[in-house]
Amino acid sequence: MSPKVPTLYSALSAGEMATNPTVYGSFTNTFILEKGEIVQIIVNNLDTGRHPFHLHGHHFQAIYRSEEDAGTFEDSNVTEADYQITPMRRDTLVLYPTGNIVLRFRADNPEWHVASGLRIFQVTIGSYRRQKLTSNAIVATFVEAPLDLQKTLTIPRDHLDACAAKGVPTAGNAAGNTANLLDLTGEPRSPDRLPDGFTMRGKVALAFSCLCGILGVMTVAWYGLAPDATAASWGEQPVAGAQSVDSGVRSLETTANSAEPELIEVTATSVGGSKKA
Image (cartoon, rainbow, N blue to C red; front, side, top):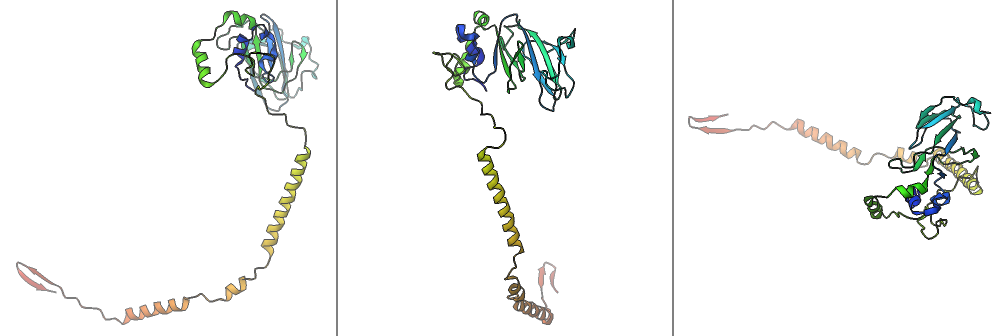
């Protein structure tokens, strides 16, 4: 869920509080990285499809990638001995169905072009700094060396003008609060998690839906199988006007047959005289 204030602007306007992940909101999955820190990410794919995952601003080392259907990293009994001695470096890696990968990178690029120290990682975070962190989001935000950013980066005036034209605040925490950076009242919130199984309201709605469906089918069947009392009377009634129409047709035919052809005489006049036909 996007915060009211862009994360970069929060990092630049929060002062010493920029190292507190709370400032960036409850739904941005923000991690603060120190400059030069080695970061290891474990990604577990709980889905049966393949998914490419991308990290902006860095080429990570893919030190381990499981086969398909290997399960989670925690359940696969993988150790350091199973890691690649010379791992490939990528910025995007495909995660196999119901498998896992282990990525590692050094946080040494806090001034990387547009993102300017903010790293977007499109993934579900399974582990970070060897701490077991679980998230249902598909995006995580790495704020890299925010205090260094404040010393080296200035937002261009045209960027600030564009935000002002759109009504986007450029200072404060994720809720736009500049007085208390830890007060996130009013921040954009993600929809509530769907409950497991049926709630009582769902069960009642399902029961009434089934009942209405059954009654509807019974009504259609009863209506379709009921005898039509008006069908016989309609079949016995003569078609009104049929006799008169037939008589009219016969009268026209008799008139046409009995009438003598009419002789038409045309006279044409010209310079050479007249001709009678």
